[in-house]
Image (cartoon, rainbow, N blue to C red; front, side, top):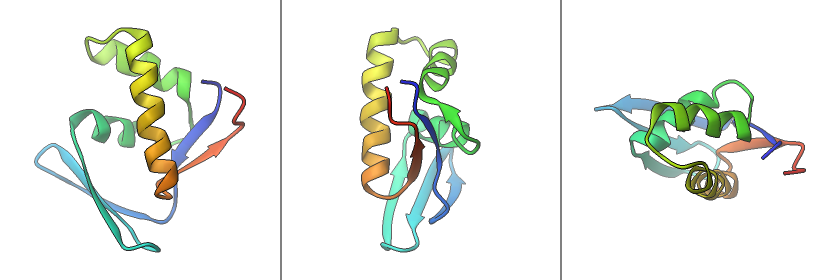
Length: 92
């Protein structure tokens, strides 16, 4: 939870109808993010600690911390596997 995440530079993204569509330029993979995924993407445009990201999402959505942390970590892991995010300090 103390790791710092940010969007990686290899992504092209655009907002369409309150969702973000993005493509990994290097891999040629295309993704569509739902409302919450799009919000996470917007928040990590600048480097952000995962715990702070969860704090923001808890403020904006009706979600309990434990569920938020699980879902955010899963989402970030998927983005990491696809080259969508960069992570600093993987201590948490």
